[in-house]
Length: 300
Length: 318
Image (tube, rainbow over all chains, first blue to last red; front, side, top):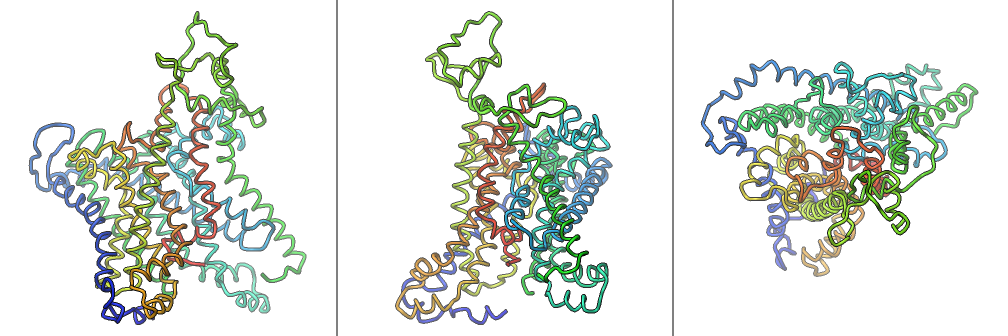
């Protein structure tokens, strides 16, 4: 980018008056970075230390060093792998649903119709709301007896949240409701950036609808859609609020919920720190991929 | 838009508009249901089939804000002289709880709502202030390893809250910051500052450097140029960033659940805690939820032109 070349030289004339540019840069940048190190990195170092101990925050006993025991136990624990499997299932179902619904909505909205701006904003509303508070209310919507969902769909007394086999998908459905608008928002931006002359050329060539969609629309929207997918994958992987508030089934115990229970209900602090590190490494891997694509999108 | 010509295209457009209306109904129904339940009498909230048309009442809001006790079988209460809002509760077989001096006792909700406001507003102010100056620093000056620092700043936001919460809980417990407003404010500021830096950097990058350079030539110091030229130019961006930070802090659940329990508890962990065992009063939950969602709904409309940018961390601009 050209912006680097335009930067003012810190030793410019202005530096002679007031604060020097170098001083201002440090004054502006260093405190924030220091703040983030103190409140984000230092705690992680702290918990790395605890992850090698059998520390329990609920007891007064001092922590004993146990080496890699916690990590060994966790990686050999079949229940933890169940939690990861549940999380993977949840991520796949909810992100797939969000992409299909969100992209579908974007295709629908990508035309002119009355009140377009208002309709778009209204559709975006769910993603701005608190997951915990709205998720809680979905318990009433899902209620087998007096829930409006069963009534509207004519499902009788269908058990959404109390059936262990269905509960995870019910939570994912709420997540799809909340976050499809996000995919829609990004897809709309991608769709509106597709040059119109491509469609005109295609219509002169009498190209079929499917051909136009798969050869023009989809390839051009793909980069922005990919950002939406990675972002949603990362967020779905971290999901805690929604599943925690809506159900307490063992089949909906996502890895964040397991981590919460291990740390704050069972008080296995040392072990939970180790699990937190395993999760952390997974998230950082996804984040790395995400940032790479963000930078690519910026350069376009 | 290409002009619609053929009959087939016109039909396609009609079908699309029909589907948009359907989508609108599906996506707004849950929110509308919250709003409707917030004004229902308790006995209509959980009926089979669900009640759609009803005479709205404010009783759920009266119940939301006050502490009530069940009327005992032989308890005599002066119904006639009670104020209207107290009569609402009396009809439901409850009376409003009073202190020895006859003052009406409030429920837990108003204080949680106030806590939410205090924590969200303070942390937003801090995060936006820090984010703006840091973004200016990154935007206008050479910073060694800039991309790496920006990645570091962003990655702190990407961590799952529970992962960060475990060590923070232990540290806060050691210094007595658990269940305090300050503790929560610091956490939310740390959480939002990374977002503010990324978003504000985009806004500041868009302000032409020539403005400041002209000011510097005119004898402004760099500081003056920042405050008098850059900040006013960035006002829209600052406002949008602030609203996003506010919404994030307002909606946050996991940290609040772990770090607070009474004194500094915010509304998101409090509202679900009302649904205990037994039959919850959904009208009260709905009224608390509706009141809690209202500011965010208003802000969403104010933000509508910046949503894309904010939700993509400033990467995608229109």
